Image (cartoon, rainbow, N blue to C red; front, side, top):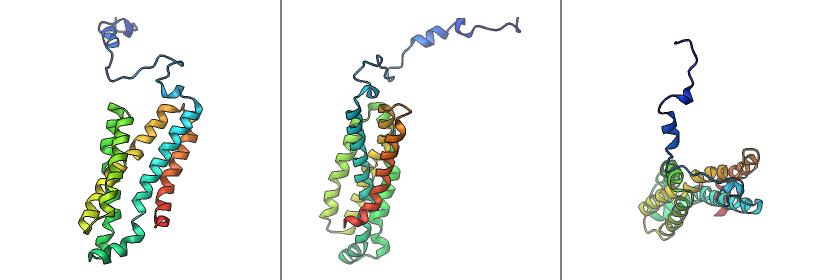
Length: 191
């Protein structure tokens, strides 16, 4: 009896498990479903991918844009240059923290709202940095901006994977990666 092959699909309980649907699982109705990002038109895919690349470039640009001004921060607020460099270090630390929230959030509630929240808060926290009266304001706001500025970095890859099939995804990801690495290069030039 033990030597006979067992039909696993015919065993009790297997059908019950297969019938239960995960309420968090998104399913599409085939190649005509307009809600499926893989069915978007090519111009729409290019538009969305371009916007993601620009958001990512903007965010990584902000990571290095303060670097040339470290000596000015040190003089203006009476701190050492080692302390002033925290304006960049804390932003990048925020980049390390942000994806821990934005990545999972984008998988659970969708890409749109975490991305919008991240970019909005990132932009808002640039204002207190610009009008700061002390170094602590710069450091705290740069850290918070880094946390929320990480949203495009954490979410864009998943968005591209949602839109492009595995064959054409390589080109889209290459453009995204180029924007990711271009931002920090342009940042110090922006001063």
